[in-house]
Length: 281
Image 1 (spheres, rainbow, N blue to C red):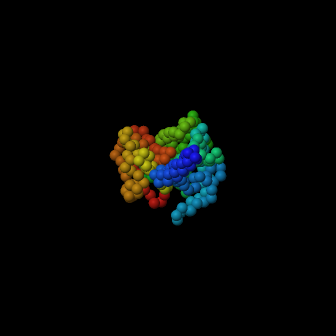
Image 2 (spheres, rainbow, N blue to C red; image 1 turned 90 degrees about the horizontal axis):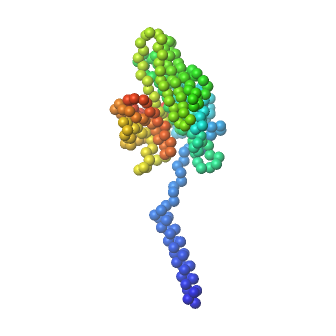
Image 3 (tube, rainbow, N blue to C red; image 1 turned 60 degrees about the vertical axis):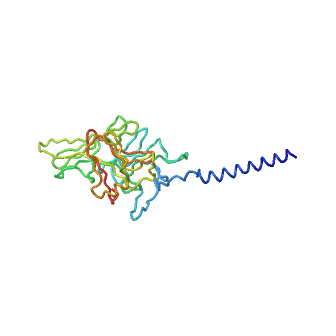
């Protein structure tokens, strides 16, 4: 009889433990939220792209169609695949081959950069300011010294203006993720030319990831060894057309996601800034 009572008591206590734990865990230790949707990123792959996607009032075109619109230099490394847009000298097509969108076995690689006019456009460009219009612009079509950029095989992009002055971008890449771009101007004319080199990173739309107390998502700059976490999507938008300008310094500037980062790190002292544009370019 005592054994039966002990058995019943043990069953009742076990049930109370299980029910109590379920109640407490649901109340105080909620399950992890589902991952944030990254719109069409999970549907893309280097070989097969989704159709056009409408985002608000803007019609976004098929990525493959956008890429086919302009001449390109292929990027091939053990870690990266993509291309450089010869119109405007932009690195705007880049896939991280060693990283996948999800843990699924057939998950495609992560698209880090995408061309303007496609979904989630993000790209890096290089150019010069010139008061007399002697420098190339976003519509300039550059000439490439080779069809493929790979480790140990740099590619020179060049364009000559009507005055005979040649602008060059010497692009090299290592076997991981670092691009080096050397901007040069060759002036055999004997006539002075006033130019100022610049580089930029452009991103359409915010990251699907959210900033936390330990991870900063969005615009970020590191100047003279110190990171600035006060700048974010909101502060850049609220700054208006003049943007947020920093004092001349040494460091880098760019955009972060939870796991990825695209940044510009110029040699020497530079003047960095963030600006918001409603055009998405």
